[in-house]
Length: 76
Image (cartoon, rainbow, N blue to C red):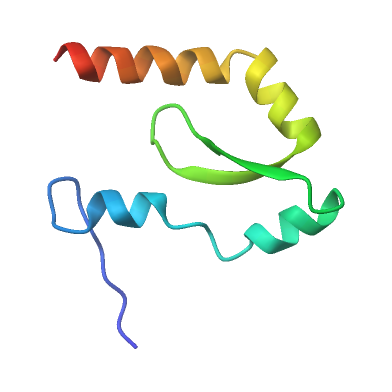
């Protein structure tokens, strides 16, 4: 198996960003299968989080930062 590096603009780049990480089931099992996926500001990469981590994401400013990035992309 060979590794493939997708760069922005390559076919499949956005699909790759939306593919859950291999460890998502491990994160889900931590909290009784209560989990969500959030998108990191700056990279847009989805990562699995527990309920507590989701609350921190929403209340700690990361969510607002990501919304600002999306809005800026829409205006560009």
